[in-house]
Image 1 (tube, rainbow, N blue to C red):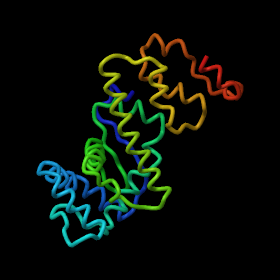
Image 2: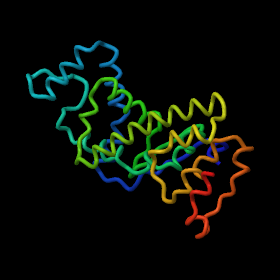
Image 3: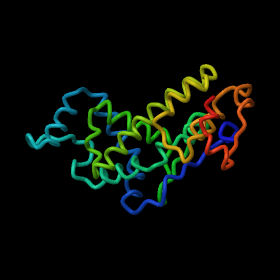
Image 4: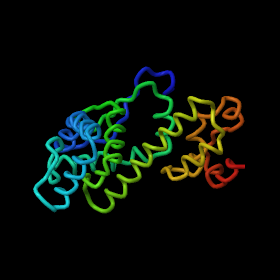
Length: 212
């Protein structure tokens, strides 16, 4: 389904006014991050100094460290969508993904570019929130990395089910059998045809048989 669709809409949740502003500001922050990364590390270090309160230096590009947009971005990246196993085939197979959260929509590439840019600039800590939100943000950034690995694997050659299972082992599922069923769209048709999708009560109780 995802592979044949021209565009896939990924729904993160209802959001709020703050998340709408954050979604609207992602492209702008990406452009500013690109300028910082293009120049040199001096500007990054100056911004970090300002963030730590060492002096009055700050980046002329990025929002202030106490700007509400950083917390709102944390709300976006902490959504459960990023860490669900079924999303793996959605991201890998789709030709184009548009991410919707609240009233706003952004291209998937904009979200991944922001995550990558913050990591490269060592500014991930700008995205704030509660300890649980920060933990979810870290998982989302890791998921974005594994999405990229899986996509490269699938585009190069159909990976084995074992390879995909390893990539998806830290993802969230509703049923244990989904750790296999959620990957069938990424393996070769021959492998997929040998596994019967069964959500019966008996099959759920003996979910380990799917792995055999």
